[in-house]
Amino acid sequence: MGTALAGRFESASRMVSLLTESIACGDGTLAVEEPAKLSAVTSDDVVRVIERYLIDERLSAGVFMPD
Image (cartoon, rainbow, N blue to C red; front, side):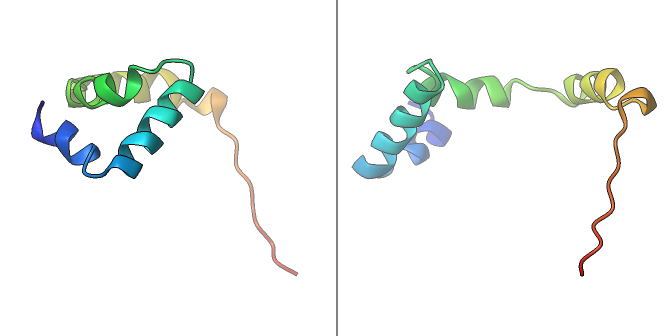
């Protein structure tokens, strides 16, 4: 088990929490597989997603005006 994964399971309560969240998301393996998937993301992947989804045609802006 890798250090990133081992750190996620430092206590029984943390392990239960992570596994419960994974199951609630519909896939009990997420708690174990997610760190490797996240580590595999490259800066090129991030740029590709930004260029695809963060475009002017999808832009929404809001202004918060407190009373």
